[in-house]
Image 1 (spheres, one colour):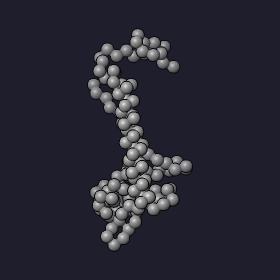
Image 2 (cartoon, rainbow, N blue to C red):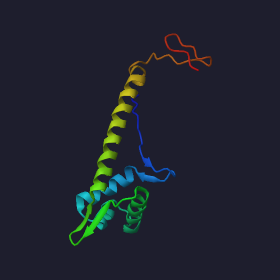
Image 3 (spheres, rainbow, N blue to C red):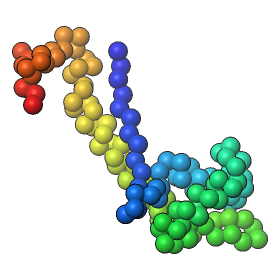
Length: 131
């Protein structure tokens, strides 16, 4: 049986309110790609009002504007881009670290059908004592 590890990373403010996570990341990426919040909402199959509300909430929690609208459409501000890139770097680093740790901790278990599991006292024939 093959296993894999999954991680979910998000950033909160001091009050525990979401600033950015994978959902807001997708919104910002779609706005950057399409140049329109309306088109981003359509692509993500979310109501425009919901997307706009998430952007506004994040702007309030960050204390800076994420987007700027003009005649041509919507673009990310410098601060919005910085938030996007910093979150992506953090997410990628955490994912790589988690993958490495998973391989280190579970690699032998996945390879061996003779893996030894601790008994209720934490004893194994070839493993550490738990607890």
